[in-house]
Length: 116
Image (cartoon, rainbow, N blue to C red; front, side):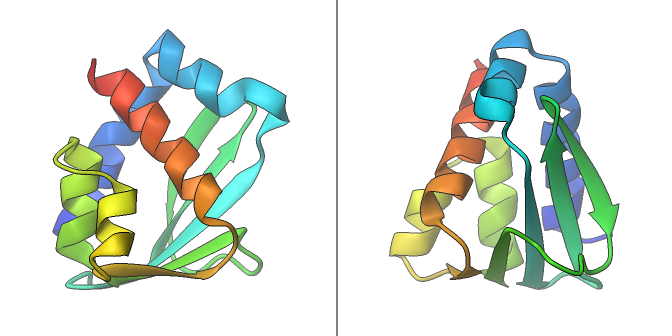
């Protein structure tokens, strides 16, 4: 398991155990899948968000809401709260190849809520 997946797994546990973060995930029946294809990761992985919970899965989702490609270290930093996804995107460390950037920004808000 690479650094990005490890840090994503850690923050998902924290998000799922934090009421404020869960509210962000549950609002408006948010149902999304983030597919990550990252440099430095031995395999792709994805996050499914549904019913106010996030789940991490290994592999490739057949129809993700978002497809995020780029530097795994940047995703690891964002998952630790050291910067955020907007910084990663604006620095061109990662790119949203499919979907709306606002979706990953919302996930970043859940990370921030969990880390407070």
